[in-house]
Image 1 (cartoon, protein in one colour):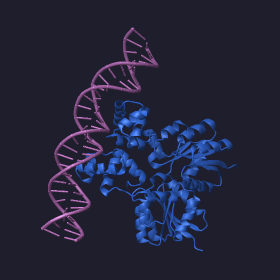
Image 2 (tube, protein in one colour):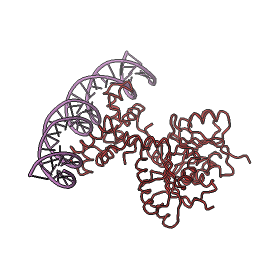
Image 3 (tube, protein in one colour):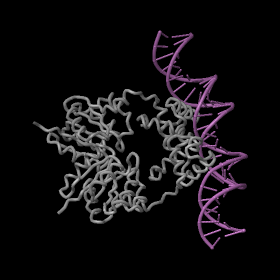
Image 4 (cartoon, rainbow over the protein chains, first blue to last red):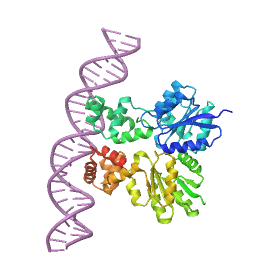
Length: 203
Length: 203
DNA sequence: AGTTGGCAGTGACATTTGTCAGCACTTGGC
DNA sequence: GCCAAGTGCTGACAAATGTCACTGCCAACT
């Protein structure tokens, strides 16, 4: 029987190598490539068929979700397995609506990854139950502009600098931030940024 | 020749499993255990000799550095290899003064890990050159109190709440934060927290 | 005894941030 | 054409934050 061709996308070199070693232990898997960014993944997939893409969600440049979107569009047959970190949950809902096949925590038992890959290849959906809860919990209340303002605020920019970046007036920026603070039940912009980040709403 | 007995400490299950798979590929290594926390690591080491401890620096509860300190004291023969993330550099200096043997980025090529372990076991010191630069660069300018105040500010607490936590007056807290902001060349407390975190000075 | 330095606090002040109400303009639906 | 919704702006105000100069205390040093 033909083995499953896997592509691993993960920016941290060490973790990538380790994942590769782990998956190559499985007799029915063949790791056809391992890359450090979304761009490299797309380039490699253009040259060679891949059955399952195993991707981290956070990578420099285009995120794992942007990659997933591209792949879904250009190679609809390729299955998508996304791996994420404990405290960056909350991407699940967006991942789901985008047609990701499996979604796991990096904190899951390692056998579970191989299992998830096989199930995804068989056309099933695998969501870590812990993440499932988050997905059902609440949806992102922020508008795109509120998010952008909050993101800049989280980086330490003040209202004037944010306004300059977004080509808005200071007053408007403060209105956006005020909205975000109230929507998130936070006490100030720092708190709001922390909450949003923790829920995966800051990107 | 006797293989090197390794213990892996890393809280993310998947990454831990993957690292284990990677290191078990080496003929001269034997992974005698893999644990998810500093406590478990100490417990296991009490029962069984370990030549090299490979540890993540950030784990729930006691950090990798606290673990390293314990190990250094109780099993001085055990070599210490610390692995860390790209944007949590700056621990290097503290790690160095604590006698850690090797310090790597998770973002390093994976062969480098095996290599670093062998060198560490041979009594050599291995510091990722990229991290070396950081270590030489600058030392932490924050006092303990400034750090504590900044840490709480980074979590979204306001001045009054921080003052209550630290049993200080609001005025003093603002003085500390003001000092921290100026020392770090930041524009406000958010900015200061971001800078300090990035340099590894917020703990 | 006097000096120095660090720590905690105070008071005053300017600036920034958070909140709110309301205005003007565009867009799409009816 | 009219209405409603969304977007960006303004002004005003209260609250929080950032800055600075100065005081009192204590411990260490000479």
